[in-house]
Length: 500
Image (cartoon, rainbow, N blue to C red; front, side, top):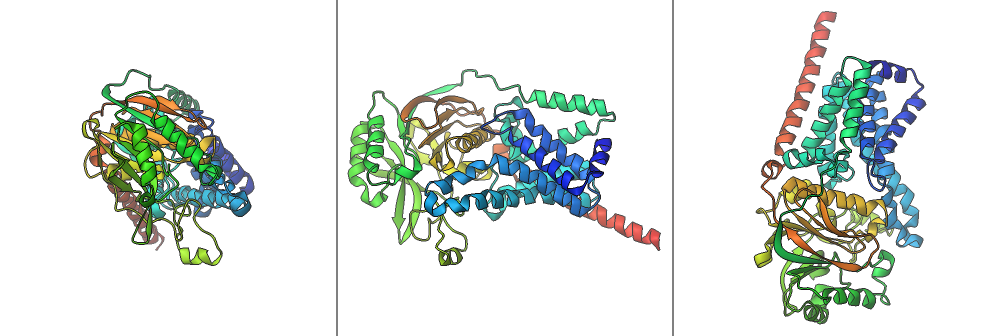
């Protein structure tokens, strides 16, 4: 690695940055829609090599930024899709959105390399700093942990480590393995080690039979394109389609409709609720809908009983910034810019937090509306352990390729981390039943209208990560970071004394 770093250090600055961006872009091939998981090794290795090639903190920062920019810009190309729903109004924002988001997320990787160079430039320092930067990305500015490198491991045996370590512990462990391989004394040994590491990611968790409960859940997938979903002429088509799927033959114990499945406020939807209850023939139905209370609007779900009455409800609490609400709304109102997904002036209000829904013999579920399944710590903050996780989502916003597939990967991460099954109803797909090991045991494809009846897997044993959450890793990373700062301070003082 030292020889390679020395060669890179001799390149012109523009060439170093271009190489860094290219390595980052290769890492994006590990994510959907490409799915070549071993490619994630490339940007992780590149981070350590680029750190050693940087002679200054400034160059380390630029290298990290370029690496992250290449990675996030290609991985998150789906972020332009929401702006094309109403292209005449918001299409102009699409290129700004992908560039600005990639730059912002790349700043976390830049800060990791900058800190590592500032603190002495060692590989261990970068392991701690990079894992810490990814943890910060999951929390600050409301958090956006989408496309964390360990997200690609959901199919690999290594991904089962999420049950023990969670996403941030897995990031730390993965970086530690890469650093250890790169530190092998001979160049050929590092090459063989990296090849073995990359090949190990091709070993997937076998599709063995899951332990199933006696309960069947029906997932309804209407496939309503986002540009038609709220069209008054198309609304009856999509509502009736969902009612027809609900009334289809079979005897499910619970029926799920996706996020904002009905284009009405819950307060005005009783006639439709009655029709849904008739179609369900006494089976409880969970559906996404908007709700109003005290001049506030909520992105919610409700549970209908056999008489069409709302017996339980849940309000989404982790909202999408610039989608469901606008930070500094007063500023953006001046230029007539509102949230893409908000259906009310000023956007949605946040609900009080995680809660459980009780479905009797079927068990208790932790509801997650769309974006909330991205956050491991939100899922871990349930008041009690549920029997299963339940996600209602409208992935029509994410386009028809990488976005929905990446969102499904994150849902699978949550199942592994908690050792719980997840049932997922998505408007345009991918609706799925996921077992406690994150395996998709039944699914409906993208852009497919239909319904899926699947047996609910039994919950697995309580995982270590479910017991500990992120606290141990946060403490470890914080203490380690402070230790690096103190070590650098001691070295500077020692240098000053020697110089005197």
